[in-house]
Image (tube, rainbow, N blue to C red; front, side):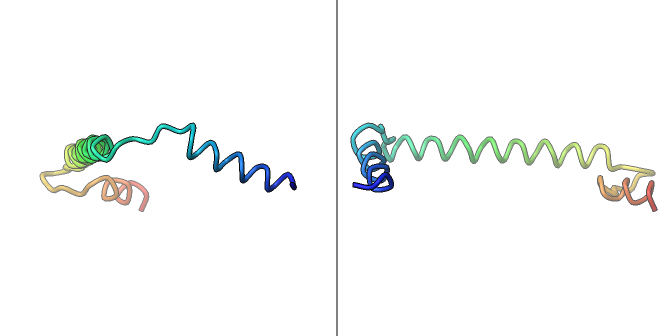
Length: 71
């Protein structure tokens, strides 16, 4: 058998017999953890943009600050 065929056969054998796949419940739990972490990170970034973007009582955001400095 060719080297490529040996590679495919050994890869298939490893994926079917040696890898421990998570259960559906474990996948759901992981997805919830990732979604919550993403929401928390998005909230932190929004709050930073809001806090640092206030100039003269008007919110300009990060890009507003950058554009007022540059151009």
